[in-house]
Image (cartoon, rainbow, N blue to C red; front, side, top):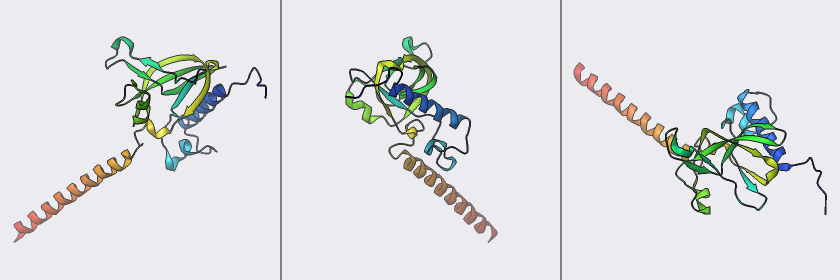
Length: 177
């Protein structure tokens, strides 16, 4: 059985790496060796959403807008974005899932979009045993074919505009005769 160093925490290291990647995007670093987040051709946002698991293996969740003082409903979420890290303590902002309230374990698979919020929680990363990084496109609503939906709406608008142009052209031709 291997023995881990007391100062090593893979969750803490992963959160630090995520923070570094997000900072590189915010700085618009054009010469990074990292993938999609920093690629100008494939820019997918400035957030790497993730899930945290407790030492018991449970999904960690936090609440936002408690008391509903900022407008909108109170919500529960297991989705986070790292805002800052000091040693092995982190400030995480809550990412609000759209269309799911997490009453059931299977609800997590139904999330199609995450919205950034300004609700934060301070955590000791030593309290977690696992982290699961998610696709950054969840935060920008490009997951699960939503891009195709946007493309379809754009195509419909272009076709409508072309039809209007054709109708206007036909009207001018009739008036000339």
